[in-house]
Length: 53
Image 1 (cartoon, helix red, strand yellow):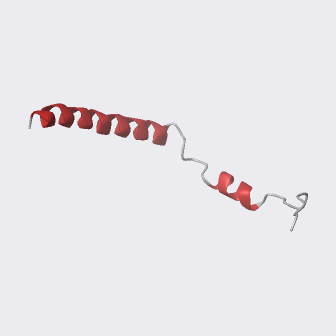
Image 2 (spheres, helix red, strand yellow):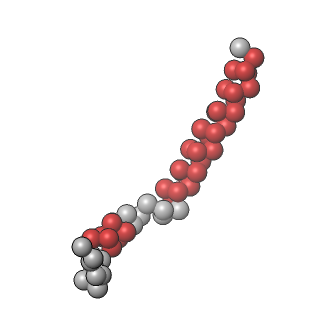
Image 3 (cartoon, rainbow, N blue to C red):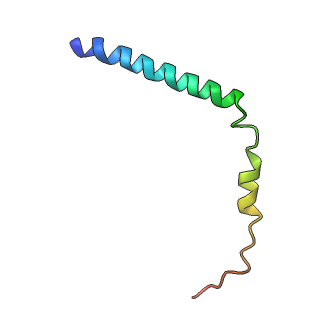
């Protein structure tokens, strides 16, 4: 029971910190351009690679 008095405030601080970091990431534009990285993989030109079978 004594461990709960230590672990509960620590876990609440972690949750608060994660929430603040996520809030900052949203309003700092971290999630504004989510398609370019995914499309870059699909548009990659692999013709220059040689394949040894």
